[in-house]
Length: 462
Ligand SMILES: Cc1ncc(COP(=O)(O)O)c(C=O)c1O
View 1 (tube, rainbow, N blue to C red):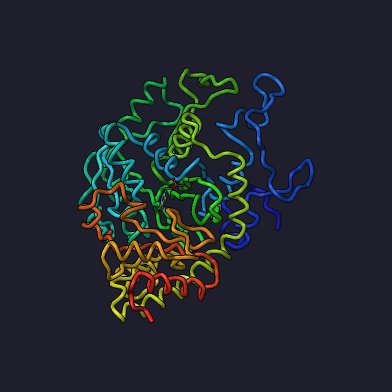
View 2: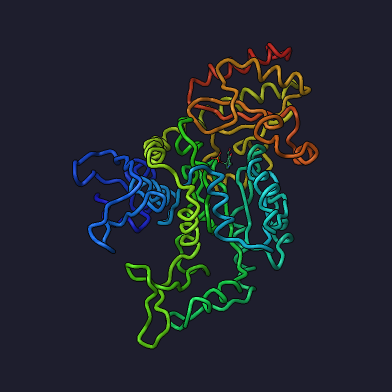
């Protein structure tokens, strides 16, 4: 089957394993090269004034990056994707593009530490207000919504405690709230000038929902299908998959029934506004969330480089295979940790695939797998935990996650060091908490390494 119309998500036509390898990719028309070329260029030559081939300057757009954006969009069941230099740059773009002074955001209380750092140490300076709640209970989200709330920021499962939120229930709460909010939608072609349009935009009060889906990837979880508006990925993790780059992505819902499909003025090839014969602005209905995010991608310039986009496209080709192996290995390691729990060496295991996981029933409902991330709490003090961490040989003691190499992290001293200790402890990120990103090595080797490191730390595992 030939993929002819790239503007349509082809999830319904092709199986996911086909999409990861083939979606949005075509043989290069000039050479037949099967692999998407790296268009390593800063600019593009115009044929004549006002006539280009769709590309002008790589900060604005780049053919390699476009392929990755369309590929990611199709994996999430949309046609709107944007990629950024990091996951944090993608996060920041959401705030730059969609919020203003005085707006309020409801945030899940176990979000990645860097997200907390950006929100609490920077974005509050611009007059954006944040309320952190345990989003596992959808009522907590409902109760935290204020009249100035414009965004719900969710992560599921969370980093590092793998808390799972009921995304469909939260999306429904937001939809209901949005229906209650008054709004004026400008009639197409009835707007006299830009100021009039901007005035109407400023009155907009409806809420968007974002899910950071980095831990699951679209292999196991597709939040747009559950009703949210934006999905965020740190491409640094599973999607690129080989610890070879940093990157981020935003995928925006493709659904003309949503409130943010609105008229925007049309421009001619020289960027001039077009007027109707009656003198009002000629408009077209666009996905304004995508347009506003794309504007920031270009205006700020934190877009992904063509080379990193190319590496990510290659990484995604094996995403389905890798995620299955990550999960298979994770299950074996969880079984090993359970034996240690019986011996009292491990206090708690956090893995959404465990029937004992607090949100297992929701995880099972909304995800098709449970992934390769595990957290567990050693029944040991800080010193013993650090000795254990320093004794691993095969596991890499590293900040990141989601690559083929297995990595072990101590959130309290690494990823979540920006979160004040009392807040950390309140949220369950104790000194003994350890996060595992299970790679694709032989699981027996991984288990043996954990065992020997525990022995080195003086824990009686044998
Ligand atoms: C869940 C999650 N979201 C976002 C980020 C930020 O991504 P990046 O490091 O690519 O900026 C991370 C990084 O660890 C993460 O774990």
